[in-house]
Length: 251
Image 1 (cartoon, rainbow, N blue to C red):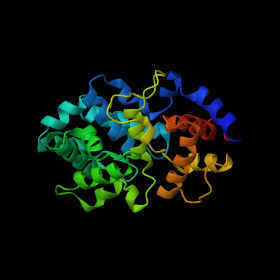
Image 2 (image 1 turned 135 degrees about the vertical axis):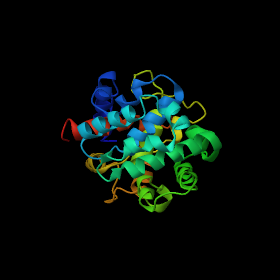
Image 3 (image 1 turned 135 degrees about the horizontal axis):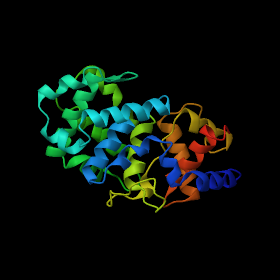
């Protein structure tokens, strides 16, 4: 495959601890407790679109607003705490959305076995895309602002679900390179899907990995098929390569 040498070179360059310093994954790396890592990662991934500097800055603000104890804050907040979130904004994600995400996460952790529990329950033998769909159903099964639904994608509705797939990569992959956490032991990296976005989609097309023009769920499926041929056990490790080639190498 003509794309393989470029992918392997990109993988060597960017699947490295120095990558953490340049990427929003640095936010969950601030924590050591499992639930803190999960929640910090999920919220950071939720706002991971746009300028990386802005994403990292606003993710730090999120953690500060939760007193740098995400799980404890979510499980013990009261409505009076929500006043501090009124001025929060990251692009179209605002304080209203943030407050609901906290309520929904408390529901998920108290009633559904946590984020990991959702994905363990609804995984299929070859995919976590149905589980992302089920997460959205559970997340919005409690009263919610209509505007907030757009901030959690649904691959069964055609979305590439880039941010959730990136979150899942962080939680599931474990390769001793110091970037991903690998704290969800009952999910296999082999069923992860690629966190496709505009930049990585363009690189994937240049490398001949996908032909579909839209960056949607069908393109993700197409890319998954190709990457699973390269490494059936750990296909999304190539995210480092495609991301690095697009952002840093201007491929």
